[in-house]
Amino acid sequence: MEDTVAVAVVKSPSMPVREDIWSEDATATLIGAWGERYLNANRGNIRQHHWQELADAVNSRHGLNRTDIQCKNRIDTVKKKYKVEKARVSKSESEEDYVSTWPFFQTMDGLFGSKITKRSKKRQAGAAADETEAPSVRKRKRKEEKYGEVATAIERLGEIYERVERKKQIGIIELEKQRMKFMQELECHRMKMLVESEIQIQKMRRAAAAAAGTTTTTAKRSSASAPTALSSFMTLLFSN
Image (cartoon, rainbow, N blue to C red):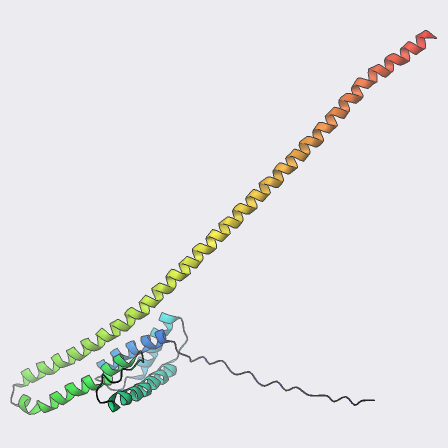
């Protein structure tokens, strides 16, 4: 007798499904909301309740369930990615030699990049000259520079929101096309069922009419044969 070898099959545990995967649209919304608060904080760290506001903005706009910690981790990841892309640009002889294809590079560069750095150097170079000006003039210039930076950042954020809204509109149009196609197919199916039902009803009516006509003819024949039989019987009786 051959020995039977039992092989125990051990199922490997299924990989957990990650719940912190970010889409490009959700990331754009997060960067936009965070960038506004970052500028309002003079490019400093934002407060803890701001992160919860960012999570609420992302969740309400995209139907997600992100936490404040997940939003903070995502921003940290975006910052690291920007540093890598910025280093690649800086290693080139000029910024025209390498153009980053990362969709958030321009936005992050507007918040952290060379343009802001150049403006800061210009302010430092002209600091000595500004000291000779009146305090009110220096204060007004600082406000104008800050407002210019905020306006540039807001313009970039507006471009991001515009792209997000354009994608949403395209999605809505596709859904409407699918809905119209489904309604047309449903209407065709309904009309087909109505036609088939009407055909069956007509067949049943013709069958009922034919059956009723056969019954009437049989009854008439029976009524006509009865007097003839009686007359024959009476003739036979009196002849005897």
